[in-house]
Image (cartoon, rainbow, N blue to C red; front, side):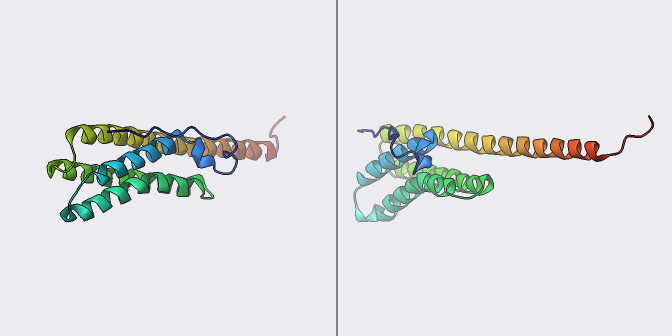
Length: 158
């Protein structure tokens, strides 16, 4: 199977489209293109819905990353990353189904599955990082609040 590689970001476009900076988006985009190509090899009207579902699930992964990146908060971004993770599970099921119906070869299946697992791990890593950043931010605000509270207290005794 001829494979598409992740795009190299174009520095002139990065200011306008910062989702392209994300390695996970580039990997997910390549996965979507490769899944689309593999689905296109599935022949027969009996498999039209399988082809369509494979393509839809695969395209949903990078699309949710893009949509989430444009949200106003990290929490909202995290919500869309969860959607992308769910789409990886959906795509995995469609790949298993296509393999078990003998419409997707083992080589294509293993290649796509490997890419899918890598993207899923990257999505979980990014989501964990967002959660850690939020926890750090909350701790910093809490420390600043305690510091201000202590500074505003009158000195007792001395």
